[in-house]
Length: 251
Image (tube, rainbow, N blue to C red; front, side):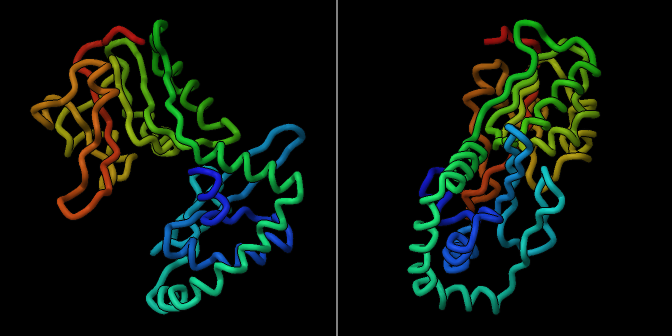
């Protein structure tokens, strides 16, 4: 998310009166355009950033802070938000005045970093050799204070390392794509793969030679692979877990 998106479509909690007035006016924007609510926690020199969708159709909590929850949506709210969209937009001027404060600008920058997707590589030339090592490295990623969005999580491991027991951690990291280079899931049939017990089946697909004919077979192909859309009438894409048949040379 860029700076403009954070300003207009993100509410940062505890940002003061001026920002609160501006965010109140921008409530219809966040409702209609899938905005976010952000909580920033500061401990000495550490800044921890959490987010959740501002509005969701059912109970929904931040992955990194269960105390941060979405508000529910309904038809009456939707009609009201449409009516108030243009009038409320003018109140954003108050939020602009709030940016005179250096603290507000710092929170804004931290939020932009939080919403800037990154790629994570675990292993590499020195491949993961046992389950406990993989667990430690994945937990280390979870504890990073900015909790950034993740495009691709690549795991380079020796053959025989199973990813299934780490499904709950992968779910918390919530990457768009997971590449298993050497590591495997326990069962190759997509409907029976144990890792899907931890990952939300409505969002995830396992990609290997048993599930699609043109599955990636090398690390490069997996990195270039574009997740398929969930249907003909939507642009929403699957999150994918790609298994490479044999360990590739790490780059």
